Amino acid sequence: MRAFAVRTLGCKVNQYETQRLVEQLEALGWRHAENGDGADLCIVNTCTVTEEADAKSRQALRRFRREHPRAVVVAAGCYVERDRAALEAINGVDHFLNNAQKERLVEVLGLLPGAGAEVPSGISRFAGHARAFVKVQDGCDRFCSYCILPRVRGRSRSRPMAAVLDEARRLVANGYPELVLTGVHLGDYADGPKKLFDLVSALDEIEGLRRVRFSSIDPKEVTAELVETIASSRTACPHLHISLQSGSGTVLKRMNRDYTPEEYRRVVERASAAIPDLCVSTDLMVGFPGETDDEFADSLAMIEAVGFSKVHVFPFSPRPGTAAAERSDFVPQKVIQERLARITEAAEAAALRCRRRFVGRTMEVLVEGRTKDGQFHHGFTSNYLKTLVEAESAKAGSVLSVRIGSCDATRLYGRVERD
Image: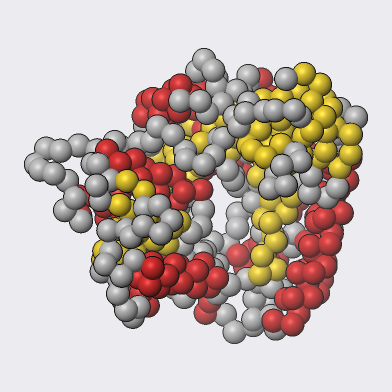
């Protein structure tokens, strides 16, 4: 039996697409290469959102060639779209597949046994996870000045709701109580007149589904209809990852974002008022070209004002082909590093304040596994707070009622009230 190995870089969309490739290969009789086995096929599902992602993609390709000298090595995905020439310079990579070709990898590589052969079009499980990601949308029409994704993922498009619901039922039947809806621009989801909140309402009807979560959404897409749907839903989680990028209105304009800091705060306030125990996380970029001390201070102030449960802080990374990469007013790296340290400290303080609200409460925790030392089970509350749980035994995918006794900036700690 032929063996394959896969490495995935980047976002939840990439992780979903890798799972689909895995299930297609397995349907054709391929198996995962075990440690020490030689693979016949090695695939790197690349990412190009930052320079670091580029570097990790190249490293993964070189490692596959070194560890599997007789394998067919494939570079696939976003980095191929952006800079195929950089990957062609790596010795030993046999195929370069853009995102459209990645969708048809088994066909493009000639792996189908014959004309008319079929492979799964969706997924039925999510290997190594207690929750499953469900890709419902791809592409983006926004063209933020720093972002390469519209150029490598194409225009916004959505999966038919019927296909999403069929996949969701299959995943729930196979033991996944939580589904994470994901897309390059998730809030743009549309199937004809039906929007994201309609999809959430339809998912509510699936028996056995405990939780529906969103990967990331832009502020203006947290509409009144979506907030009302989440507030009344049986399954929608009280957590939103609402992308901010900067707390400065002038920086947001240079980024070509379509909201102001004041609008962002109003969105969070309305959602928090309607959805009990809502936690909000976000992304914040440090060192966007031209960022002044005052503009950076606006981001610090926004963290204090909103009280995010988690902030993904990252430095600006110029992507060739974007408007921001053409600017000449780059912030010095030393300044960026100083600001990263300050904003990380502010984000940790806000996260700690957020978690303290739940000490003494009983929370439902979806178990994902045990800590490496075996001392605790670990999982997440419905509002996406990581929790370490003292329990005799708990199976991954089970939901426990946990009395929260303490917290720090990254976790809650608790004991099971009842299994």
